[in-house]
View 1 (cartoon, rainbow, N blue to C red):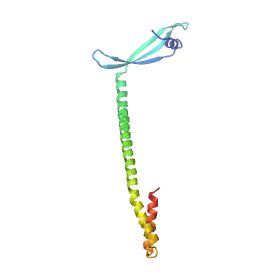
View 2: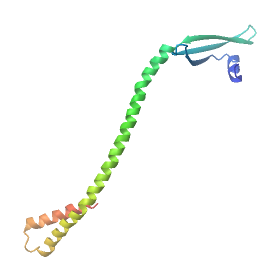
View 3: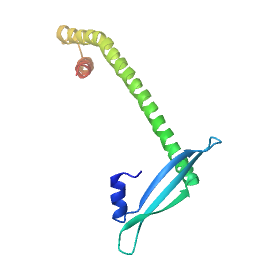
View 4: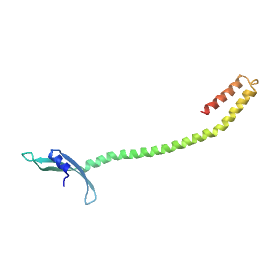
Length: 144
């Protein structure tokens, strides 16, 4: 039994196509395209439809073969993205840990550099003052 929309389409002269999947008795899938076209009498009254069934199994299987690598690629991309996200989280945790672990030694080096600059500035030559200043600059660059 046709639904009212389908009947209206036929009455308007609209061709329709429907694809179906069937399973044969031997278990194999086949695909059929059913093309229908309305049939009118001499006065323009709808009297039925012409229908042509076409075996599209080869075409459907070819389309499936084309789609399969894309699906597999999308799955691999998703898996790889998940892996990369996990590695990035580990890397962020490692960077935070290293940054935290280096703060205390760098503060110590900065403290010794300041002690040298403040307590022994008169005894340091130009190279010594430059080394202390460079050490302090390097420490301040690590805290940001």
